Length: 133
Image (cartoon, rainbow, N blue to C red; front, side):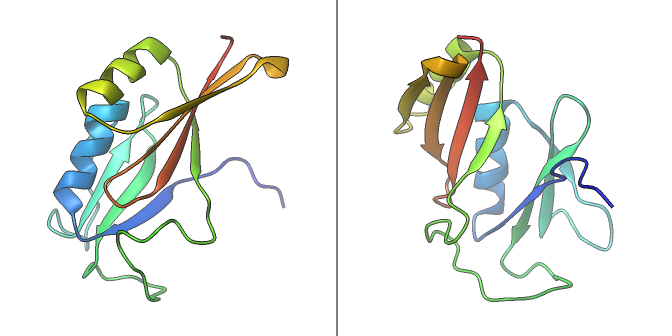
């Protein structure tokens, strides 16, 4: 047995459309309806440029196989942040500023990494990583 890669992150929200639009606008992810039995009203999946559904966005009332209490809008809890490797640093900063998002940058010069931190509409902390700069 081995782990090959992270498959996806699931976000439970009371603002399905706003959350999907946020990820489409900020990161350029493609919004698609989740497969049945989920519906467009309770689940949207966000696809990266490789055609992988890396974010599953579900409404609070979306059926879940493993159900547990969630608090949309609360801080991310035990999961501190979601980190994504990205390209196009200048374009991301322009999008962040156009969306009037608060953000913080960090440089890890030892490994040539620039990080941009911001939060989504549900207060999920994003770490957007740009290597080589």
